[in-house]
Length: 481
Image (cartoon, rainbow, N blue to C red; front, side, top):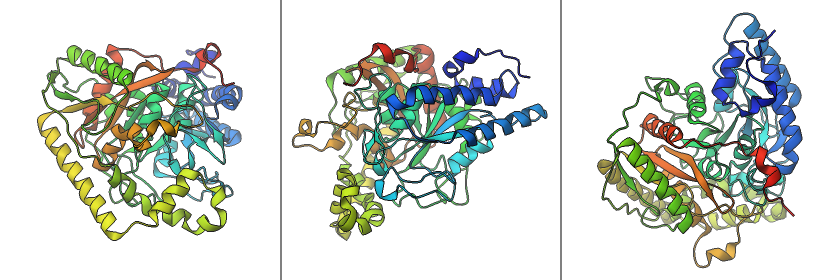
């Protein structure tokens, strides 16, 4: 029988790493941890829409198998007994694989993604699928198939997108971890709006696949968590080369979790930018991010460089390079089942069908120009500091497009998709609230210097502690009418 060193009623408040270690040390059983979180989902998910599918029996069976391993004296892995959500865009064999699209609502996955498989191998317990906009096509989370997902801090507002269900689930204490993908900020944007931690590694850090997941090499995988250490532990379990992903990176020579506190950070050269030289930023968001940057710079003795970051506007490249995948997936359905496809995805597919070879060539050249400009930036600085998102969270149902008169709605996420095109590691850190929901600071580092970015994020946690669990304050926050 486990020795209850952790109060059962407070299990959801504990960091993931601590829960896993408690299961491994028989201080609590994996089944108790899973049952507690399943009860949390039952209690709160209807109000949030974070989970769109839950497999309770499979979760319980998995938890029992982990407890049996522990009882035998063996170690089930560093994620032992941790229940986690899986973004609906990611495969789990036997579970729905809809891409949050109504036209695929009957499709079932026949494989499991590399990230999820490695989390399971490390002792993790998948409990269900979390919400996303259709095909991850928006920075808010709503779909024709699953409806609207809401922010636990303020249910009138969006949790962000496209990994909005995962961020909402972690922030509300429904699970300690949830997976996400990031092709334009889809880990970092919801992390920012839900007050949790989100990290996009250097491109290839977590292997993709095993199925085709897009040709432009911008999609990254990771998790939403409530601490840097939690994410570092998951990365230690999921990163490393995989034969089915030719662009996957080799493992570094160190465990990220173990090395978080040993990285030399004092005296680093950093630069601040609110807009990257081409974007816009809400004044209150910029002020909050600038204040956090200054606090971090002062605390760690960083040397802020008088260096103006001026990047080319890469929006056209980002839109064009991902277009063929949308056409390939939705093209056959546009004429006969167009009403079952979200307006956003329908517009992307229609526009993509009209692109020419010169359009793709120009996009590739623009992407290369961006990469060269960022190479110049990182010759001058070690880290780049900027807001994660440029505006406060919009309504849960989606933004008022009239507010973007004459400019693209993508301007609201320009600070994130830049680093998908370039492949740099980037972390989103909670820093406060603006407009009724959290906002965040983004730290970006050189490619392959993921550990430095994670270590800087951990330093911020120690300097400015943040309580990422929002579920307890739902009752005294605004409710949807």
